[in-house]
Amino acid sequence: MDSLSLSGICRHQFLPITMLDFNQSNHRIEKAGFVRKPETGGLTITQVASPLRRPVIVPSLDNETVDRRDRNHVAWTSVRQERWEGELVVQGEIPLWLKGTYLRNGPGLWHIEDYNFRHLFDGYATLVKLQFENGILIAGHRQIESEAYKAARKNKKVCFREFSEVPKYENFMAYVGDIAKLFSGASLTDNANTGVVKLGDGRVVCLTETQKGSLVIDPNSLETLGRLEYSDSLGGLIHSAHPIVTDAEFLTLLPDLVNPGYLVVRMEPGTNERKVIGRVNCRNGPAPGWVHSFPVTEHYVVVPEMPLRYCAQNLLRAEPTPLYKFEWRPESKAFLHVMCKASGKIVASVEVPLFVTFHFINAYEEEDEDGRGTAIIADCCEHNADATILDQLRLQNLRSFNGKDDLLPDARVGRFTIPLDGSPYGKLESALEPDEHGRGMDMCSINPTKLGKKYRYAYACGAQRPCHFPNTLTKLDLVKKKAKNWHEAGAVPSEPFFVARPGATEEDDGVVISLISEKNGNGYALLLDGSTFEEIARAKLPYGLPYGLHGCWVPKE
Ligand SMILES: CC1=C[C@H](O/C=C(C)\C=C\C2=C(C)CCCC2(C)C)OC1=O
Ligand SMILES: CC(/C=C/C=O)=C\C=C\O
Ligand SMILES: [Fe+2]
Image (tube, rainbow, N blue to C red; front, side, top):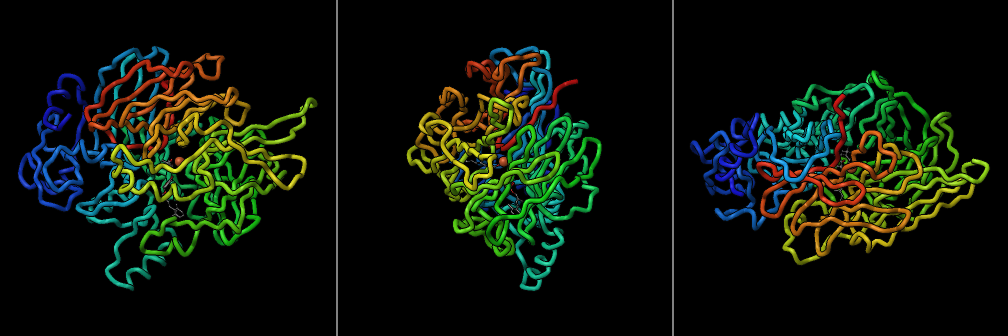
């Protein structure tokens, strides 16, 4: 679908409710109805029209006026306008019990003026919503108004330190000044582009790795309401991008880069105060391992100490390194620490084989016949101890897929066994044969009622080779050690998100939601049955959206 046909389709099928294009402040309009192609730096002019017959952006990396659909996948192309909302036409049937809003966050804008970002994780946050009620689906997206995003729009340049992008310094003194601001956190980004969570008190918060990037949003309008200011004095600048959030608590890890270790903290609903449960000192190495996520069981928090360590030197650099703010330190080894949630005491600390993970899937306690805990099982999307996955997520690599070369490094469901009898070593094995899911594995969800408990099913993205990025939706049966894969040629699906049917007794009784970015530039919301993993509904969006990372469910009360 091109932008000209968008106008017709929108009026008849998508019923746009609101729309705002980027042209008003972000991109120069050469003349009415024409825009400079923003990602080229070239002068090619493309005529476009929007549902309201105002000019909108057709982002392209090409320097010629060609059909961009053949060249650059919409998954890796900046979102074309600031916001949109409208009702979608549904093919199939949305279950009537599905009442609420699925929110998905992710980096959706990878350029400022003519400057193009390099890494997937640098993009300014785009929040997407799918509101389900009575079989009707209203969709929308909107940019999150972080200080970093607003400053970049206003000043037409990167103003804060992002995942890999840093502001361009006019001279050495400006660089030194910015480094000084790094220690206070002032120069760090608040671009909350990673996840979105609903706290027990109803607040909905978008998150990233920086603590200042905890932004409260309105789940209906997607408006940015303000920063969640933590009222404690725990300090530190960073935290895990994936807190464990339930109606009862918000648990997270605060890495300590000065005295290598992690604080395990807990925040009650209705407060902004995190309280320390306990501290884990690193067993090895000059800095803590990256804690993008961590798992919990019913009684314990598992703190991972990966050989992929934060690196102060790389943090200070003006240009990205292959491992960005991290470094690979195999000699520092890998450990898992187990902390009792009630007492803060460390009950186990074991060395494990080297590993690399972004995402833990779940964890649970194993017991003997007398109900005594014998071990903890912790599952994660494990990248075969190869940190190069981080560099594979450069946009140039993602955009360069030609349908032939197979560049996605192998990954698996890594299953750790942590003995609770004082043994010094833990085990790491594949939970199922990785060929079951094409040796790709990331972006996982489970039935939230199984959090910290023995579970059977997980949903994630696997791979149909050849590919550069996970491209299947996969249901994992961890008991039968089998996977069922959904795949559509050329499509990039985002994290399959499981929503349980109210009153369900079976673990997989529910739906799985994903947003699909298609090869031809289109996109749709997809609903699969959680049990059969067959399609139950899909609804075409007015235009394909960029890839997004993590989501949450806000039930309608
Ligand atoms: C994954 C993933 C990437 C994205 O990260 C965003 C930022 C701003 C991360 C910044 C940093 C590190 C990754 C390491 C230590 C310092 C700091 C600069 C805060 O969010 C994600 O979830
Ligand atoms: C997209 C991704 C990690 C996202 C982190 O939040 C990993 C994909 C790897 O295969
Ligand atoms: Fe993540």
